[in-house]
Length: 232
Image (tube, rainbow, N blue to C red; front, side, top):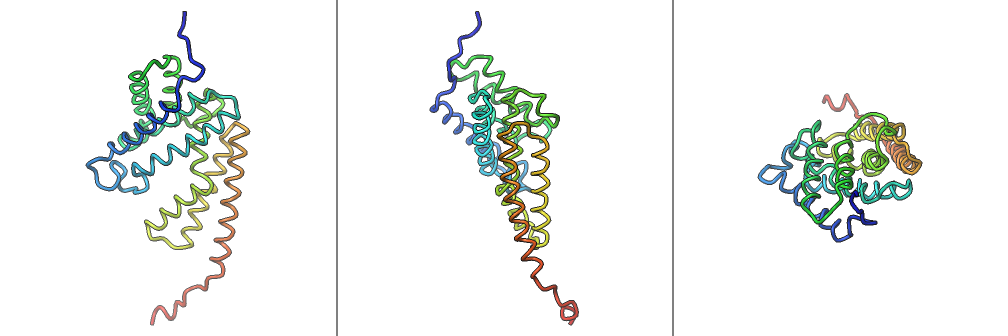
């Protein structure tokens, strides 16, 4: 017989409820901990940062899914849950832990088809896969591509500069860290498979190259310190 699947299993109101659940779950994950829970030594991995990352990835994944013909509901729900366990589980198991949270949530709410739930949870569990993206379902690919893209471009550069400020580094160190964003961008371009994600990656990495050129130009204009004067 099978299960009859509605054209869109997740209404906008239900999706907003999911967003609130993810937000509250992340906040609870660090409750009682000082400055960021398990990753408190890495301040920008607070619950607020992680939630913003999830929203960024979700928005990107929806854009890719719509243009590439993937199931948008599966993609957006999986994206929303993909890092929900990031602040309470170790890096190498956070995807599996997130899938468990997603499965429990979706099974406890309304009447989502089991096939839909399994597609979502499989995507969450697989999103840390480091192999060829052609080996995963299209919805999982959209999520993984979006996750890669959020680490490059202006957003990735900003995160690196925040790290520079936190660690009190110099302009030269900042230039090196922006270079790491470029490396991530090149890696993203080599891994993504959809035309949509590749186009976004190229746009983002172009902006980083421009910024790095401006930064290098200004650094070159800085006069080196007067070593002899410093010794006096």
